[in-house]
Length: 434
Image 1: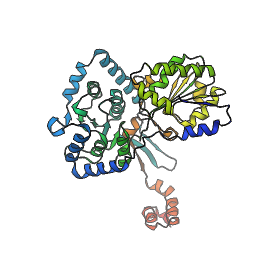
Image 2: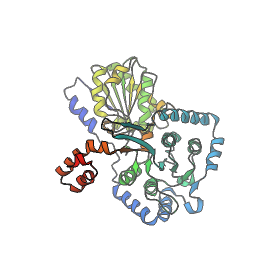
Image 3: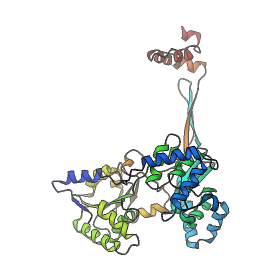
Image 4: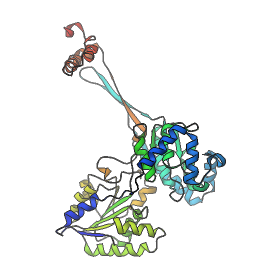
């Protein structure tokens, strides 16, 4: 049975603190194992990838092939069901349109001292995209990771995806075709992240590594950050729903289970101001769990990490939501804007009764790669900017240097850096250098 909390209870603060601070990441300590895998790939290159792929995925890269070709992806695009092809293409168009709006513009101006200032943006040269394989094969994640890179102008996009037992997911290949990803390696796990970071005999390194994965992939991204950029270190999925009693409890139950079915460590939380509605949602969750093919892991998630929280009014729930800083937040009310205006910390917000979180996972347009584990307090979802970097520039003539240079000289001397001071002072005009 999931946790039930009531804001009116005397021990509510302590129990809610425990919910906020609860640790849901996998208990297995993989840091040392990942460190060893990364070291092997750096030292042995392709030989390490072949050995690790055979061990973890039961797949012989040398015998069965290292790469997936563009022709295979095009063929998959033709062979998948018509409705799936149309859905993938619709999703791709909407994701591209949304992310086009994120592209930053260069800036340049001349200030009152005559200094020309500004910044320009450039895409990274190469990006690596990790796409899970096997049972956790998500073509939507490929689109969400590859399309922003394309929009940013990345020239080389490298996809790493394991093929356990040699199995290829046709929908993922079709999505790669739609997104224009043509360099695809059949390698997964921490070793794939290491190969993208340091390169091997076959695989050239990249500048940024993005994409979801298991605890080993997440830990590998954590360890290589600084050598390459990463999107984020993602943890278990989570959803918070703020809903009044005018909702259909079956809808809200389905929304909560849409995240619970991801993994036993996922988290689903409902805030409501209606006790009868809370009971109705709890009953609906139990009914739907019995019907889901993913019901076994969803039930564990709901039992161990789910919660229904009764609040005095829905606006009072928002400070509690901010403490959770959830990956996904639904505001299932007729007029969500006042609640949205009060929210400070959330990865993505779904506003109104007809905006389930699942629509954002696939076809709405905003990115579904979002911060988890309360990281929405300081980070944002994947965007075009994750594949770009800003270079500032400035240009001075003699008059501009004479105007602001003496202050630089004074600061350099104050910091005990005489060469800094001399670098400026030697260029100052005669009237200002005396």
